[in-house]
Structure formats: C-alpha cells, structure tokens
Length: 424
Image (cartoon, rainbow, N blue to C red; front, side, top):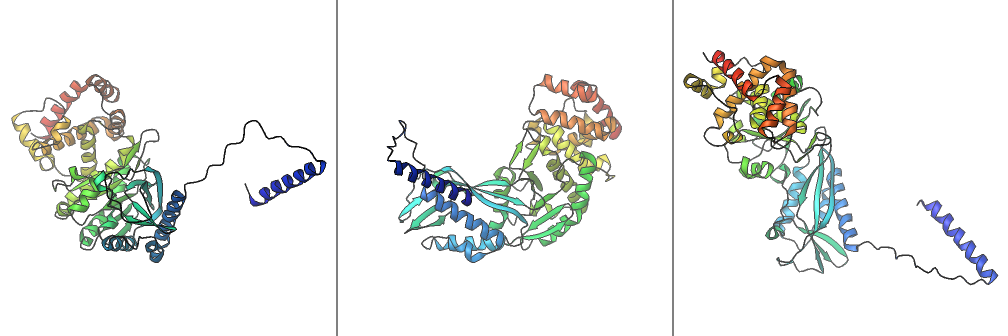
C-alpha cells in the first residue's frame, strides 16, 4: 500500500474509534481472531540484504562494498580469492547479476566456525552475459554465512563440500578475463590466451552468419566463446567427461526449455591445447560445428540420435569449404574401399576408438541428405527427429519417412549409393 493511502486508512480508523468511544458502545471481538501477521526470519532478511549489496557492488564496480560483507574471521585465502574474483570480472559484459535464496542446507556433519550464529541457505547466482543471454543463467553457490554481533557476513564458499555442496566456478574464478567483441558475440580468455582468442574472433562473425544461412534466423545469433586457462577450468566449465584433452571444443548449456524452445547458459568452450594447434580450416570447421549446436539446442531433445546432431553440425562446419570427401573423411574413405556401411551410426559409436569414423559417416550422411533434400529439407529433418528425442526404431522410421519419403532402410540404401560415387 502506498504511504498516502495507508495514512488515510489509519486516519479513518482513528475517527471511527473516537466516534464509537464517545457513544459509550461496547465492541465485541470477532469469534475467530485474525491470524497473526507472519514475521520474516531476521537472518533471511539480513542475508538477502547482504547478497543484494554484493550483487550491486559487482554491477557498479565497487570493490570496497563487495569486500565489506566478507567475514573478517574467515580464511584469509577465501578473502583474497573473493577480491581477485571481483577484479577478474571487470571486463566481462554483465547484463544482470543477482543471488536467489532457495531453501536451506542441513549443517549436520560439518564443524561450524565459531560465531554467534551460522546459516547455509541454498543460494543460486543468476547472471546474464549482455548481448548473448536472453535469460539469466543460474548456478549453485554453496555459501556459508556467519553472524557476529548484529551483523551477518559471508564466511566461505567451500565449507559445505563435505555435504556434497559445491560452488560453481565461472571463468572469473580462474584469472583476469580478457574480452574481444565482434558482431556475432565475444571471446573470453585469460592472460596467455590472447593469440587463440584473436584467431577465434576473426572467424566468429562469419561462423555465425554461416550457421544462420543454414538454420535460419530464429536463434540469438550471439555466441560466447570461452577459452579456459587450464584443465581445471575446462573441467569446471564443461564437466569432467569433456575435459580429458581428447576434444578441441564443446558447446554446453545449463538447461533447455522444451516449451519455449530456448536454452539457457549456452557457451562454446575451446580446449586451448587442442584448438591452438588447429589449422585455419580446422578451427573454422570447429567453430561452425559448435555454433550449430548452439543454434539448434532449443529444438533438440535429449536422446536424439548422434548421427543427426553431430553429422548436421559437421555438415555446416564444412559447408562452402570445398574440402574433398577423401580429405574430410579419410577413415570413411578407407572403409568404403573394403565395404559399405549397412546401418546408421549408433550413439555408442561416438565413444572409443571408432569415434572418428562415426563422425565421418554422419557427416557424409548429412551431406547426402542435403544434396537430396536441399538444405531446407535437411533442416526440417533435423527439427523433426532432434525435436522428438529418444524414440523407438519404429517411430524413427516414421519420422524419417515423413521428412524424406523413405524409411531408415531406404535412407541407408541411398546413402550407400552416394558413398560409392563420393569415394570411387
């Protein structure tokens, strides 16, 4: 209620009570008393205020305000890392930065620090990269707060790890962030990563344009490319399954909203060791491949067949490069000299020693489909099949038939004929 309105209501009540008292009337209380007004948890309000100050300090670049809420009794290394985090964020184009409270962590099982009170609410960081994120990306922050006297402080972001709670680490946790900006997004790196970042930026705008020519304009057309400084950062950004050094890059997302066909927190993360030694052509193919995943992610349901997802991304990656099939797919060329594939690549083929062959088969299959259906037809097949996710063989047959006029067996036969001609 606005202040003026509240004042008028209180004034009216006061006049009415004076009138009733003057008449000497007895006022009988209601049979069911009104429920008491809920009082907010004072620690919750105090921590919310602390987190609001912290978020505002990040956006307004006020280091003194950011550090003021750090527990003076906390581990000095924690305080140092927090100040470094703040400074490392200076060049990052932030559109939003806020913290949200969602529940509470039971502290049984850890030894709390000496303080008047200790609390561990579930905190999520919601941040949006300006120009790239349509909606904020949200990440867990395993914070522990302490009260000393009448004031609350942030004490730690690692104390809850024995309970299985871990704080998400963004690029700014691993060193100063350098940002190079183009029309199609930006490239974020650390000191030492500038040469690769410059090469990526030189390819970024054209890569975004190429993906848009194939997929269409119904995506953000803005990409954040991250270049980690080491394996630890790579693991933090993409997970241990993709940080083993065997890949040059990967496209990641926090989550996909199947209702709105949008994805949150999409990033292209390059392995600096693998990507830095790529030829100009190979780097171009890699970027276009991963950016294709970014464009199509909102239309892709978990469990969709890898031969379509990876083959389509490779098709866009090689599009317009004039690379002959034998050079683009040497393992497939060797196979065709001995025998022709008799089935579509299975998801399991994309792991282990046969991975390269699976990718090359999938690229050639999508190249065949593009030549047979045209690029709009290939995109329509991708939307149908990738949008269905994991389906039975019978349902896949039906989806392929709807998009191509042939079932899967007919698709394989046409692909075999294409391979004979492509690899004479």
